Every structure is written in structure tokens, then in C-alpha cells.
Image (cartoon, rainbow, N blue to C red):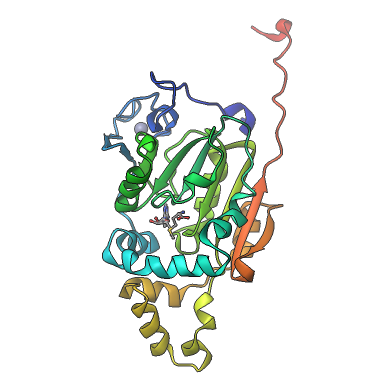
Length: 293
Ligand SMILES: C[S@@+](CC[C@H](N)C(=O)[O-])C[C@H]1O[C@@H](n2cnc3c(N)ncnc32)[C@H](O)[C@@H]1O
Ligand SMILES: [Zn+2]
């Protein structure tokens, strides 16, 4: 069936704003949840606790390492360095706007941030949009609710690689800052495209992979030195090993999954921002009455 026909919005909940379960599709059997906390097809639970819907299984590969880092003490230690990096780019707001200026959607759009963290981008998007977010780490999702209590019911503990949403549920979808270490880049890009309606904007942005290769340890051929300074910034042992083993070819992965995506350099060349929009597929007219049985 053409994507345009499968794409549809779920109805809003009783308070007028759709919650995660109103837009959700079961990860196991693809049934629509239709607002329920358990899948009507297979019974898989999608409990909401404290405003966050659980739609995740045990993490594996890079997601296990990243999830432990962002839910652990290392992220709090590393955060000031990330902020400093963004401040050097002319200030955190300006650095984020280099990406978010590409995020276009109609008034009252539904938009999804994948890897929303503590929601630092939410104050920078159009006020009449309704934002949703997923993340593999629970503590940043709680911080997001602390920052923006109205996000309750619109956050899911879920992986980019398995988004618990119906096809075409959103007008736009973006991810900023986590992509390089997603467990399965192709799967995440496929999922972002699936849950966004045709014509909707898709964005993926992060620092250029292998940024650590600008580090002195790499330049003088002393890996132990890079391990030392990356650990000193707050990254834990597993995350450092993941960074040093990274082999992501971001151009070929993104152009493979989102043909026609345009690349915009950001952060003085230290970051990338890919923007993609599927052409609107016109919905074919209904068959003439005489051909209906
Ligand atoms: C550097 S933080 C950025 C947070 C936010 N996007 C921002 O701009 O401030 C990266 C976030 O991506 C999340 N993340 C990493 N891998 C993920 C994945 N495979 N699926 C969903 N979230 C992921 C992390 O848990 C973390 O909260
Ligand atoms: Zn199911």
C-alpha cells in the first residue's frame, strides 16, 4: 500500500491532545494501540508511569553503552563540556538554531524528537506545535518532565531503532546529538522516515564522527592519551571504547536511507546536519462507483 494511504493521524485523547498511546503502534505485532495501555493484538503492555510510556526491551550493543552512560553519573560530569562546546559556537541557543532553523512544519503540527534528553530544544521550537519525545535513558526523560511538565503523556522510553508510533504520525521528526552512537543507524533512519508523513521534514545532526581524531593522542599515535583525556571529560570506560572504535560513515549511511538529503555544515565544520523531506505522494482518487462490488 502506498505510504500516503497508510499514513494517518490517531485521534486525540479526552483533553484534546493526543498522548503517546493515541499515536502508538505495537512494536511486536504492529497493531494500533488506540489509546490503550496494552496492545489489543498481542497484549504487550505499554504502561505509563510518571508521564512516561515504557516501550522498550533490554538494550544491546551501542544502545546498552549509551543508555548506561546517559542514565549514570558520567553524563552529568560530561554535560558542562558539551555546553562549553556549544557556547564556543556562539552560544548554546545559536548553536541549536543552526539545526532547528531547518525544522519546518505547519501550524499546530505534531513533531517528534528522537533522543530528546532533557528537552533542551523544546523552548526553541514553534509554540503552537505539539512535541513528543523518545529516549533510551530514563533519567533525562524525567529531567525533561521537570523542565516541561506539560510533556507528561508525550514521552516514551524507547529506542530510535524501534519507534512505537504509527506510520505518518508526525509532521516532522529530528534527532540532535546522539546519532553517532545509535546501535543501528539505518534502522533508526528508516523508523524516523516511517513515522513522519510524506512531505514532513526529517533532520539528523551531531558532531562529526571521529572528532577525537583531532586529539593529540591520535595525532602522536598514543591511544592511551586519548583514553585518558576522554575519561577525564567524564565519559565512562565503555563509552570511551565505543568512541575510539567508531567507524560511522555518516554520509553514506544517511544518503542510503534518505536519498536526496542535503548536508549542511554546522558548528564551524565540527558538526553535520542532514535535512530530508519525502515528496508528498498524492492520494489516488477512489475507484469509480461502478467498479465497487
Ligand atoms: C547528547 S544527548 C542530546 C539530547 C537532546 N537531543 C539535546 O539536543 O540536548 C543524546 C541523547 O540521545 C539519547 N540516545 C542515544 N542513543 C539513542 C537511541 N538509539 N535511541 C533513542 N535515544 C538515544 C541519549 O540517551 C541522550 O539522551
Ligand atoms: Zn502487539
